[in-house]
Image (tube, rainbow over all chains, first blue to last red; front, side):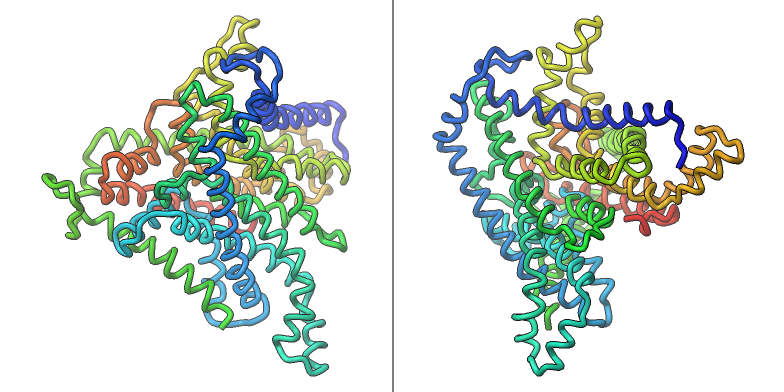
Length: 279
Length: 268
């Protein structure tokens, strides 16, 4: 296609501006985590690792980290089980209401988080009479994490087709053996990728968490409770950088795992992931 | 059989909760005891409509959501076009990852970072100072900026996917027929990319409607989300909060109907 040189350069500049807009804040918070001074003024005074040490030994941060890990693990396990089952049903069987079920799975991330949070809060406190706790957070997170596992598993099942499973059945394997030795091995990396994404999604979620948590604090809740305390700010910066890294690394790994071995990965997975990240 | 687990979960945990939300929005608060009375009525919605402050808040939220959507379209187009039509496959793959990664990095930390950057001795004022300018400080402008930042990747990815589907020959044809690049953009690219823009705008619009964290951190004005949040937490008026939470749902249903007419659902 013919694009004039001037146009090419204009597009390059536009791209650079947008990329800078996306990345400058992330770089800034990374620099602040090493800030020597308690003051948050720019430019920073000097570099130190002291706040990492302090954050690591801060009991509030440690508890919050542990709570976040427990919540994300619980939500991921539930999402993994339910997302896989739903994906198998949707992609291997035809039944009445199939489209409705796919819609139902996507709904929790299509609606604003505050609606999901508010709805769960009302149900727990008013109808079920359950005290808000880590358990209710896990239920809330699992609800919107199912879709990421589901999306990854469905994409893989669609690509791999049914011929291997049919061959397995023709050779006399029952449906459990077929799942155990044929379907599951092809699905495995997609499930790991889905689980990593679910973990990352749960790990930095705050809105649904706020409405479903009791006395405990997850890392984002801890940050939200401390962002206005000048004394705590250096530690908040360190925790912020940690949360960014702990959500980016799983996503990076998931991205590598879910890469199509044949190389047919087009914009579709990107769009799917964008949809999946919407809370 | 396979479906029993997931569907049961979503039906009970999610659709059930949504139903409770709508029912709870019809309950009311006893004026004296502050207890919730499980009596059905439309007082909360009446209060929503008749209180000027609430009307202002809804209007402000929708206005900012619209501005954010427009800003993101403008920021997304050049990079999406570059990715789809100019970049080599290698650069394209790198750019997709570069846009995708920040999408997943902690949302709260990104808002918090903007707070650090926009404060009066922050990096924004430091950078603008040599030009005799100063940043927007905290307020509606800051909220608009932060929302535009947060949801930008949601706009870039659908537009990129949409532009990639436009055959190069169409753009060349427009040029061969004497179309100025701007004419080509306006008459060929934009109409063909419209469904993708509509798809991206579902995210930028919906996410802005439901958010209360960003306004809390970088401004002191109230958005729909703030009202819901403060009525659950501080005022303890759950029915009113539930009623207000249905406002974004109603707006989004209207928005989705419009977006569907623009063909957004095919480009999701």
